[in-house]
Amino acid sequence: MQSETVAPVLKTVVVNAPRERAFKIFTEFFGGWWPSTHHIGKQPYETAILEGRLGGRWYERATDGTECEWGRVLAWEPPARLVLSWHLQPDWQYDPDPTKASEVEVRFIAESGASTRVELEHRLIERHGAGSDGMRTQVDSPGGWGKIVELYQSFVNERAADGAASGQ
Image (cartoon, rainbow, N blue to C red; front, side, top):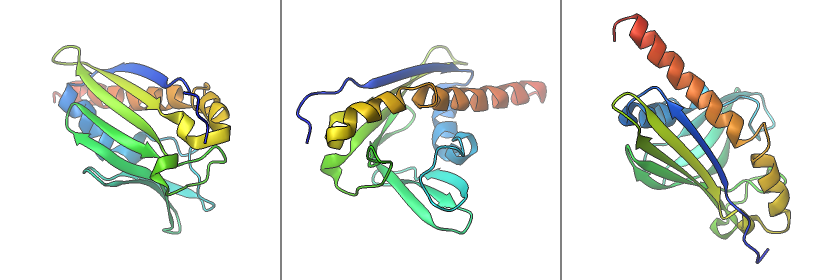
């Protein structure tokens, strides 16, 4: 295992939704905004699922029904935050060993009654060992967490606009 600390990856977006709704969309509609290009399964991707409870699974499902785990829910504190274990290794394969898993914390901070700052922190990346620097580079690249939180932001904001148009 690598002994040096790898800097966490931090990404922040502001969404046009109250904190409770922002949390609900992130967790309950996870497969609606997660990019289909970001999957590890060998079969065609169908959806990504985040089970909303402590110990819940974080995984993808393929069109043939097979599932590939990504991690577990380590903290579940609606609507303030959740923490997920990230068991994907630098070769993008799943390793069930919790000592080799990094963490992804997502915090939801009310900016106003109608907007929420969402902060994502991917930390403890050094737990992935020798390839951890490369993994950090990948998850911090333009196609990594930045793109993912922007897709989430767009998904939330489109729903806010749809609600405004329909009077909701």
